[in-house]
Length: 214
Image 1 (cartoon, one colour):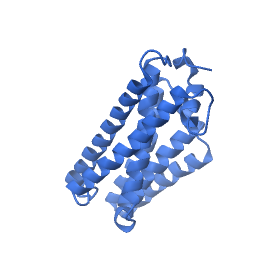
Image 2 (tube, rainbow, N blue to C red):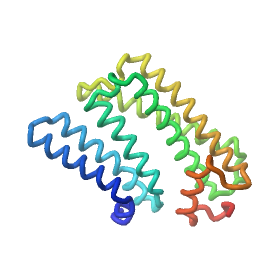
Image 3 (cartoon, one colour):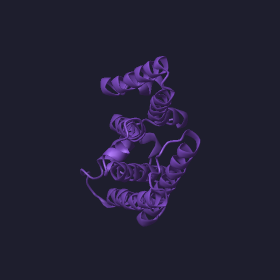
Image 4 (cartoon, one colour):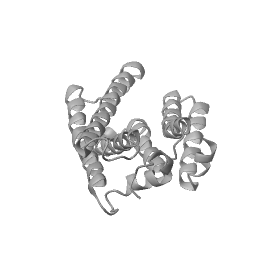
């Protein structure tokens, strides 16, 4: 795990340091809610590296940066600085981008299960499984919002049912787009801008994709 952390570069290290400083300063001032939010943001941004180390995969630096920025935007800025209320499109944008991200992760996971063998399952079936995984992640996030509101008195769900359903609709759109990217990857003969995230992950973890195309 330490090797993956060191590989992230100064930008991500700087963000992690600022979050740790924010948590320490808030604790000294007795602002426990800010302390919790800062530590939760830091922990969630480090979670992918912990999981990747456990399963023995290498994460691309842009992926870790995207996860870190997303967690900051959703938990830190969204809750601590009330961006969900101040910026009307904040929640929509975050759910859309997270759905695309979870969709790509889901596709890579399904692709990895078949060791990159595109003939092990039809492309549409692999993309459908990726879509299902992305929607599962979106549903789990809605449960997380509900529990945060229930346990810590936050307001992540905003208008309740309407907010939850709106988020799930955006999740469907984002997951469908990510599944389409996976389909393009399986069908494409040459690498392109659209397939770059998947290409980069496969390149860093070539041993997991023994039957993958070069």
